[in-house]
Amino acid sequence: MLFFLLIGAFVVDADLAMQKKTEMKMLLELSNHHATFAVEPLLKTEGVIDLMEKESLDRFDKRMLENGGYRREGSQYFPGEHSVTTDAVPFARYYVDFLSWRHDHKLFLQHKGNELVLDQVVPGPARPTGGLLEITVTTKTGEELRMAPKTMVGPSHIVVAYVDERPFLPMLPAHAFPVVSVEELKW
Image 1 (cartoon, helix red, strand yellow):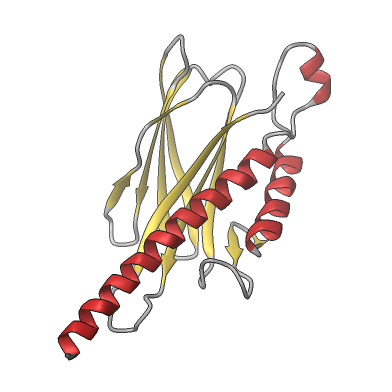
Image 2 (tube, helix red, strand yellow):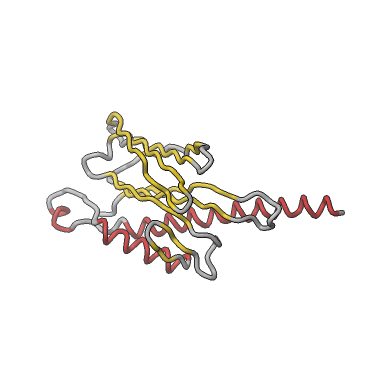
């Protein structure tokens, strides 16, 4: 009987982790979509689309708070009482501008406890339909997590968050996973 209870706990824990990943992905997408409306109006009249970084982050923060109950302190989002995660979520942002979006970009990030640090950006060749974006996150233990590549279709705002959550029961392993949102600027 105890064996079946333990199996049930594993199943419930895995299901909760998948729900958290899905919810966090949706939350990042909604927040990033709102953030990408922060374009420079004077440059827009000249046909150049450029992100206003401070306004963009303010819009992102507003949606994270409204939709998920998260408040930002530095480069972490802290959950509220009804947030999907219980632990702080470190994040990193990167903007691929009007002149660079057709080029491939490889982003290398490092999870360092309370921070998700963008270590290196390696530009690549240009593609007529838009550059390929490859993201690799290195965990605290040195494991490299490569996310599925994405194709950019214009100037893009990229947000990567790293969820490192305590398990449902203390005897179970923790859940840790990166989540990414890539949104084209809205002009």
